[in-house]
Length: 79
Image 1: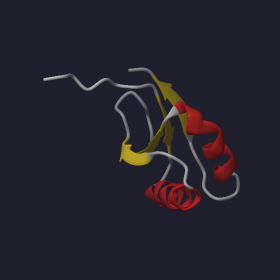
Image 2: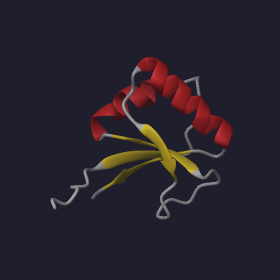
Image 3: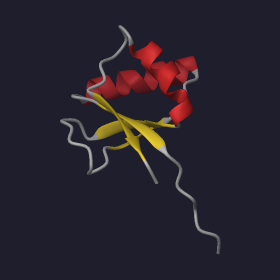
């Protein structure tokens, strides 16, 4: 059985569930690739949710976030 290959990801953390859900709604509406995931243990955050996206979506994400939701931090995770 072939193994699933992990790809590099950019993960956005949030200080509240409200901000994470606002991010999800805005990103889906704007077509920014990604999904909500449990915050990885390697990232310290007050909220248990994070937005995971491919690296090429980072620019669109950052432009969308301005004035719509607050991101506590962006992290580049290698496989």
